[in-house]
Length: 262
Image (cartoon, rainbow, N blue to C red; front, side, top):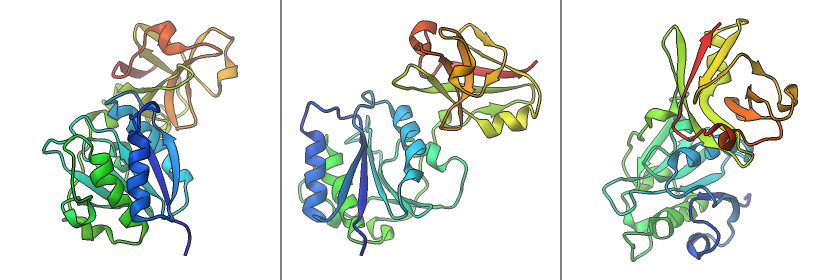
């Protein structure tokens, strides 16, 4: 039997014991699990950024990987917990839009609401479901538990920011992530741009900027010049060669982005 892999993605930071507590809860259930940290430095409560990071990395892991994602502003509320099976991967976390980008372009998934307390810790804190519900569930899945044993089928929440919209005259999207280099990543996919303007010139507009073309790589512009390009996530981003576009241009998550034919 292959060693089960569980990835962890949270907004817990590195200064407190929260991440270690989650790992302890997993290993109590499945001591053989191999735990891989994606990131714990997502800005607090930034569901959009967590969804983006998950969508860009999960397919780099082997089939059978369990992805535990806890960015949970509604912890302790009526929001439900989820386990999702998609593309031979399992996803565990709160139902608050975190999985929107993973699920956006496919219907080949099954989701189940986490309602069976037999697979939780005996005592559940209202403020730490990551340790007391989601981590033990991930551990049981690593032992081979069938997702349907955790609760009834359900439909995950899809966030409005998961998809850009084509109106015929333009694509309307928004910035969903600012990366460590200050690049402003949007929810506009390269496939959407290709369908909208196959072989035609386009302009990208956001935050008072109007960028006249989409480049292939950062080095295609002079240092310090604002540019648009499709990054490794296959999404349009606003960047500055050797500069921090978000800070210099005053761009933020949620800012609208428009793509028009020129």
